[in-house]
Amino acid sequence: MGQANVQTIISEFGQAVQQREFQTQQRNGWKQKSMTANLMSGGMPTDGDRHRAARGEAPSSSNVSVAVQGVCPTSADRLLYTLEAGEVGGIFALERFAGTIDVLGKATPLDTRPKTREKRLFHSADFKVDRVDFHPEYQLIACAAIAKDGSANIATMPVNSVHLVQATEGDSIDLAPKWIPGFRKAIVFQSSGIGRDEAGYIVEQRHSTIEQLDLDRQEVVTLASDPKYDLLSPQMTADGTLYYIRRPYVPLRQRARFSQVLKDTLLIPARLVTAVFEWLNFFTRRHTGKSLLAIPQPRRGRANQMLLLGRWVDTAAQIERNRRFGDADSPAIVPRSWELVEQFPHREPKVLDRGVLAFDIGADGQIVYSNGSAVYGVLPGGVAQRLIVDNSIEQVVILDLDNHLN
Image (tube, rainbow, N blue to C red; front, top):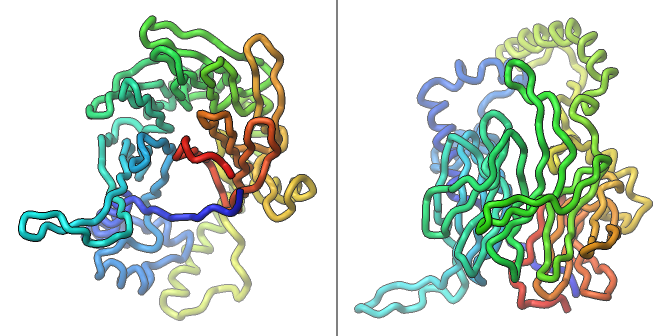
């Protein structure tokens, strides 16, 4: 078991969305459209952006963010993934093929290296799609469809279709569907109820439980629940063993602490003054090339904050806190209270590791998991070995289930 090869794949659809947005800004007057953002940041389109636009490429920094939310294999040469590009979300396939050219009616190899192409199965601006899983026997896709009101439900779709069928309902957040192997048409997923105010905004979210959806019987059964914890990203093996991530439950109202709300309220006048200063500073820099103050500008935004499994995490603080645990050069980016748990039928949960953000289970029982900074693999009865080190690893998937860890 050693370091794995890494290949970066860029979505052509995502790039096209970014490019169209950039060209629209140019045609309609990017100055008016992004005046507020530019005044606050002092930003202008760079020469590099103009050169990239002339070459038909996306700008270096686009207003449209592109993110892959879930990946799963359907075969050795095909991956399914969910993509979020601005207001558009959908399911796509990445297919690997050998390049060929037609010469006198014969397919002749053009390049011995495998190539990839992106195929759009469907996309929509009405909802976003999160996580995806594939059932090889029934040729069904399962995913989570997230509505604009914040609720989410499990949905399924035949692999050759373009229409999702809602499988769960209710005002809840149902996420992370996973087919149960060796079982009838059934899915495990995480679910949490939500509460809304009179205006319809979400003001509370209950702890996440693990549910089983039997599509043939049209019934949902709770498999695991603990009011003290969120139980997330469940997977079940053919023998009924559950694996999931467990973390302490924090009510939604408590996530925005009173001290922080009070601090933000008191800082409103100062932030208004800062906005006026930035507005004046923009025009000063625009016409003189100099700032009003020759001092470094403060960093803005949540520079070290990442939204991980539905919760904001100060990853920089967690990295420093976790350096004394495990590998010092790849500490967990999430709290150690986020645990990878194994639960046999009618048994108590067993913690396999701490500070875990994502995992996957192979057909042979091998486990691959990540703390956000590295990926580890462990065979049944073995010990964890580090496979790769990288930054901000949010999901891990075993692509070739026949390829054992060696």
